[in-house]
Length: 247
Image (cartoon, rainbow, N blue to C red):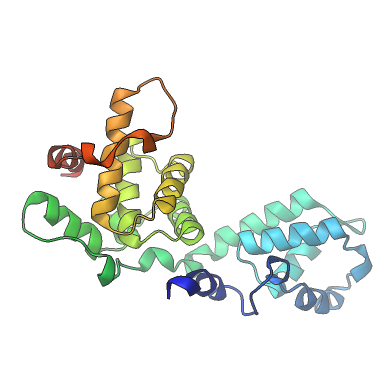
């Protein structure tokens, strides 16, 4: 399954064949319906095609829906790119609650790492047993999470393929370091590093979170890659210190 993960994620949103990135978006289907909107194919330039494909993939908009968005973005027989971007963003915001999938997944059994009943393992079991949606809801005191927060989490999970439990740790780390705000930039930076380091379990993610906090404490005014911190510097006390923020 590991080798097909990327295809499975994208196939949920696009019912087409996957291979070369140039063929990932079905422009032929898009063009077939343009005549229904009385739009001449000739007015769509090469640059227009590029942005249509980019926006279609970024916002997971199928070719049929894109036809209507393009129609609403044409002025004087010219596709206005900024208007199309706005229309695609608005369409995505409206449709998004129906498209969330990854945030409802839980940690796969093969990536669970908890054992024992001490506070550390109890928290690990908690992060392994719930999905990111439920964690965000818990952080909101049982209220529905903000759509903006769900969008950030969904985007990072589907682009970097983090395990749900690992995403839960990242959510907690971000909230602790960004004044209870889910900062997209902070999450993307940490998530990209964890993906490169092939972090799969909650325990591994907690170790990485502890490394980050230790680095921040020791380098307040220095911006460097925290990979310089050695794994052997992690101890149970540091993990407990990090987890104490969420008690």
